[in-house]
Amino acid sequence: MFFVLTVGFFGNVITLIVLRYREHRRKVITPLMINLAVADLVIIVLVYPVIAATNLLGVPLEEGSLRCMWSSFANGVAGISSIASLTSMIGVMYHVFRQTVLHPKIHTRYMTLIVTGTWLYGILLNLPPLIGWSRTVPGKAGISCGPDWATSDTEGIIYIVFLLVFGFFFPITMISTFHYLIYR
Figure 1: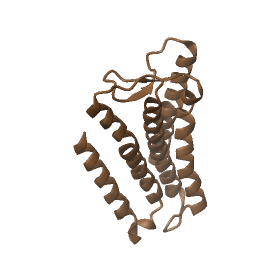
Figure 2: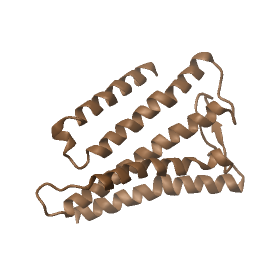
Figure 3: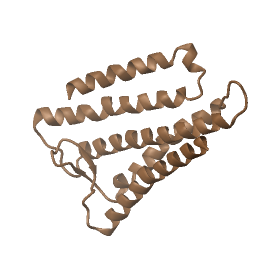
């Protein structure tokens, strides 16, 4: 795990440094690539230390504990934000392919809205367990937490369906649609 943390941290920091070079700053997709690297760093810096500490101390995460809720929320937000960023990337690429100018651009204000939107999307999809809709539970190993995928109560099932539809199926549908449109 420390190897993954180290390689992930330095790999994403190097990615951020490279993407700040002048020749990359002008590329339309760069802000979303930076957003992906930042989402990875959020997981590495904010989620993995909780998992590593839990593992090293041998104290498993408990359902309802602040550490369990934080682990699930931060990991979920960064993960869904990454999926939203990837979806946005293909949408931006479709927009670029449709433009007929030599150096296509997207206004900074729109790109800022897109990047901010990816994070708000991640927060909105992972907020329900924090406000009482469903719950987060430790995984089998007890070192990380996530949504209660095995719930049998109606409220929990509705949240899982909500999370799967908007966190997985909707982005996959959008990505597939944009790929088709680009190909066409």
